[in-house]
Length: 162
Picture (cartoon, rainbow, N blue to C red):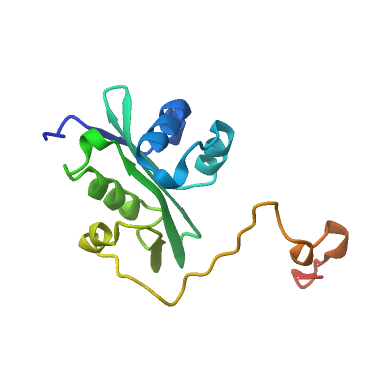
């Protein structure tokens, strides 16, 4: 497939959230039925956000979160089925990695259920030692919550006491 006419865009304000939700529903078993409002929040808190377009049709998407120095994580790499196998997924990931917010980050992580071979061809390595997860489906658990009145700011030392 000739994808020379496909345009990549780093302007997250251009993303049509309804097209994005539809693309998730078509291509990502792990992201079915995401809500428009939640997608909007996720995009607002991600940098970079890269989208792929065939004219006015959203056909690919990838985003990352990072501290800009030490760690970053790539999320939600998706490509419409009609465009898979043409190198578009690789281009999305490479564009995310080369973005100024990520290009100097020490370690870039991603999670995948079944695409390890695809990502290893881009340069990612499997890592069995670092992944842990906290299922936080109802907000922070009571033992993890610090109420604002429990935090005392020490202005002179620029520290926080709990």
